[in-house]
Amino acid sequence: MKQRINLYRPSKKSKRLQPLSLVGSVLIAGVSVTLVLAIGLALQLYAAAQNDQMAALQQQNTELTAEVTALETAYRQRKVHPEILAEQERIKSQIAARSNLQGLLHRLNAAESPQYSAYLYDLAIAAQKDSWLTAIVLNTAVKELHLSGEALSSAAVPKLLEEVVRTDSFRGAQFNTLNIETDDNSARFKAVAELHPYE
Image (cartoon, rainbow, N blue to C red; front, side, top):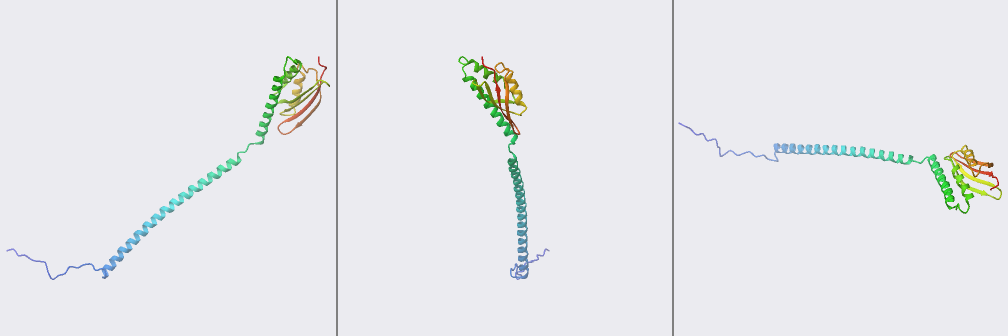
């Protein structure tokens, strides 16, 4: 024979959590502390990440500042040397002098004054790479030739004058006066030669 046992007791009430009870207060406090700790840990991790990012940006800024300083220093040090400037001026002066001489040769009409044309032509032939003429005065009244010019050094001037007296037009001329002024990069000269009577 089966016997049914009824475990339900109508008189027994179910237990519920009472927030104001001791157990409820402790549980709420534990949950609150856990949340606070979790939020604090998250904030610490976020702050650490921000600090790492800030440190990286500061390092990058330091490197960029160093690069800019190096570029500014290199730019200030890029100055043209005085020797280069002096060489440029010398070349410009030489080009201008030869251009002037070429202009004189072109303006001179050989049909009207062939003798002067020959003189200028011979002076152009006598020109050297390390010396050049800047002014020519041919005084037929006193039979003198006045030459002014420049050279890379004072030693190059006599060579130019020797080439002048070897030409057909000025063969046998004698330079009685020679003044040379020198500086670090060039020499300027003025020479006067006595010429033979023109034919």
